[in-house]
Image (cartoon, rainbow, N blue to C red):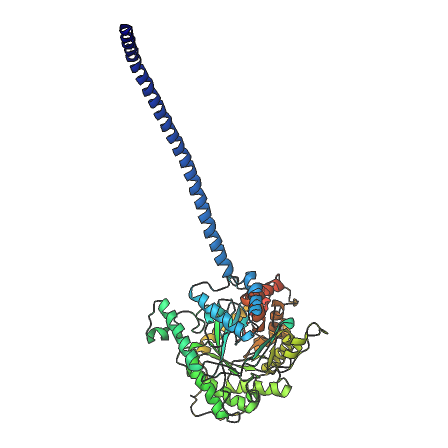
Length: 552
């Protein structure tokens, strides 16, 4: 029994020995098979990973490109004055957020200044003036267009380059007084939204001529440095003398910078010598940095200022200003204009102002300012809301679309009076002792006379084309007055669209200026008005467009 058991164990051991290599072989095969499958799985996963990685890269590329495109488009959009964002949204947001119109104005200017410092300010893109269809000759400068911005938008010359970037041919900063003054107590500006109008009694609040001159000088130095001329006085003088190839005020081709000056509120109204000294002080500080000096004798918010529009005191003041301007330390002297009130409009008053302009040697008149009167609402018969009726009772100057018809009538009246030439007997005003002697004819005038005559001969040469005046072209009477005139008129007051701009140009103005329209229409107002002008005159003979007149 025991022997059989041992035999069975031996046989079992032999059997196990026989099958062990086969089992090991099979296990090895299974391992190799599993390894192969693992490698294949890894390979498949790598391929899937590569595919997914490729898709991820493509997705990231598309996402990155989209972000860049959106940011790029967004940048171009928000910095383009043609954008609805500027012409519709921003003005309404400001009116909603800031009930005080002055505060809204201040915040707007600070924002624009900050945006300009990082290159994100709104500007006119696409160079719509490149075709030259709205060019106009003013004081020997060929401007890109006949649209200007009135003083008040940039009182202390904080953002002249920003406003120039809006596309206007002329930008006026100020008004600037000899020394700092606060102006009238706040609140001093009110909106009349239903009329797109304003009432203000700022009272010529200003940082003073010294502060503004410092700011404009720094701007000039930075411009000279950017041109590689350096920062020394020689570089400044080079730009001032026109060697940079651009007007020294605007520092841009086809544009001019006007600087408005005014007297101190505290200067006695009956001391004409002291008043003249106020203006001369401003000229001495600011003339170098201006292409045009504007003498404000028409603000309704400075007591006694409008009395200076009488012929005798006005002649004396303007003569002093012209003499001081001609003594400015630069090769080409700034032109001088006087800004008159829309309320002094009798024949005697207009004749007296024009006589003072001729007698003093002033180069032109800005016709219009805010009015003390309260025009009827538009449309005719419209009843103002109760809150706006209350605002209409506020003391101050009114501005808005309701002034337009009055502006056109005044432009025609001044154009006619100026075209009659100087009075037969010129008053001889007593010149203040500090004013330098007026030059008989400035070097600037001599240099530009030939060019003006050439432009006139080209613009008004006989044409084979029909001479029938189109609705928006210059009529024969206006064209004749332009040929014979020597004094320039800028029109301001109620101009809100391109058709109205053309109308004041046809009435005898060289430039149409806006202010309140920009408060309600935003940074895109200038671009819009110019496009509306083009739409109005489309198809009209280019030689007879209002924008191509050749006034001095």
